[in-house]
Length: 407
Ligand SMILES: *Cc1c(COP(=O)(O)O)cnc(C)c1O
Image 1 (cartoon, rainbow, N blue to C red):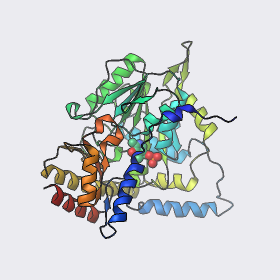
Image 2: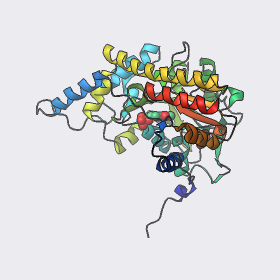
Image 3: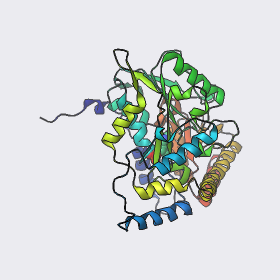
Image 4: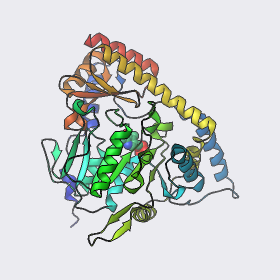
C-alpha cells in the first residue's frame, strides 16, 4: 500500500496566509462597499524594468530562428549570467567569488528549501524566530525535528530576534551545525552589521558549522558599511552558502530567477570523518534534479547588470523604500516602536498587544491588511509586518486610515 512521509503530519495546521485570506474574504463579503488595501503580502507590485522587457523580446526572437535557437542550457546557468553575477555582485565588493561557484535557479525559495538535502539527517539546526517559514518547514518535512508543542518544534535551536537584541540574534551558547540567517530580514527588516556577521563567521569556524545566508533583500541596503554579502566577511568562503534572487531586486517574482553561491573550498565531513566538497555535492544535486532557467529569463537577469539595468532596478527599490519610509514615519508618529523600512521593504511594528487582535483592528477599522507577527514564530507575537510593496497612492490612503483608527 502506498504510504506517506509522516514527517509532513508534523507541519503546523495553521497556514498564515490562508488564515489571513479567510479573515479578509469574510470582511469583504460583509462590507462590499469598503475597499481594502493589502500591505500584507511579500510580493512586488511594479512592472519589470524596461531593460528586462527588451532583453526578453530579443531573446524570444532568437528562439524563433534556427540559427540562434537554444535548447537545454547548462543546468548551472549560462556563462554570460554567471560571469556578470561574480563580477558585479561579489568581485566589485572585494569578495572573491568565481563564476563557477554560482548556480542559477528559478528561485531562492526552492534553493533555500532544497539545500538541506545534501546534509546529514541528524544535524543540529539553528533557525531564527521570527522566520521565513521555508527554513523550518523543509527541515520538518525532512524529519530533522520532533513534534511541535507550543509553537516550537523539538530539535531546533531557535534564535530569538527581539527588541532586546535589536532583532539580530547573536550566536547561541550551544554548538550547532547548520545555521539559517537572513539579512536584510524578512519579516523584521533588520540588518546585521559587519561586527555581527563576523561573530557568526567566527562561531561557524569554531564549531565546524555551515551558515546558509539568505540575501534576497540585499538590493535594499542603503546604510553605508552594512555588508551586502556574507563573503565581505573574512573567512566566510570556508563556512557559508549565499542565496540571492532577482525577485525583490528587479521584480522577478513572476518571471523567476535566482542563484546560490557555493564556494569551492567549502567542505563537510561524512560519518567516517572524510572531507567532501559541498560544491561538488550541490552540483550533483542541481544537475540531477534541475534542468536550467529558460534562456530569455537568464537574458533578462543579465540585463539588470547593464548601466541602464542597474539604474532601473535601483529606481524600483528606491520607490519601495520611499513607501517604507512613509510607513515607518507614520507608525512612529503614532508612538509604535518600529524597525526595518530603512534597508528593507518591511516594517516590523511592536504593537504592544496580541498580533491577531491588531490585525483584526486594522482590517475592520481601517480596511488595511497587514501580517500578524505570530505567524512568523513565537517571537513575532506582539508585532505585525507592514510591507512597502504597493502603489504610493495605496500606501498614503492606508496610512491616513490607520492614523484615523489609532490616533
Ligand atoms: C522573497 C524571498 C525570497 C526569494 O524567493 P524567490 O523564490 O526567489 O522569489 C527568498 N527569501 C526570502 C526571505 C524572501 O522573502
